Image (cartoon, rainbow, N blue to C red; front, side, top):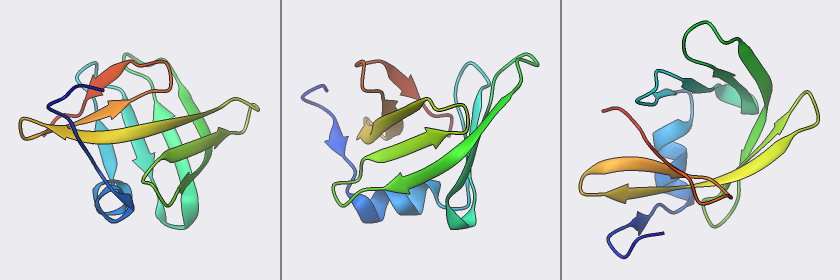
Length: 96
């Protein structure tokens, strides 16, 4: 996390993702459907991974994929742009 990051709380994260599709600059898309269904479509025809998501009290978004893989991410705002931060410390800005 950077000192200029503002961590989104549960309400702000829910507003950002619930029922929405987030597009990243590599053209990958995270789709957060009502009821907790989740899909990630890789850029350039790379396929789609399906799972379920949950937003924790602290705003962390955890995804359990059908293939048994899982991860938890944080969302922050930095200089007017939303950014997804992975557990590994990677930063993925979201297109406006």
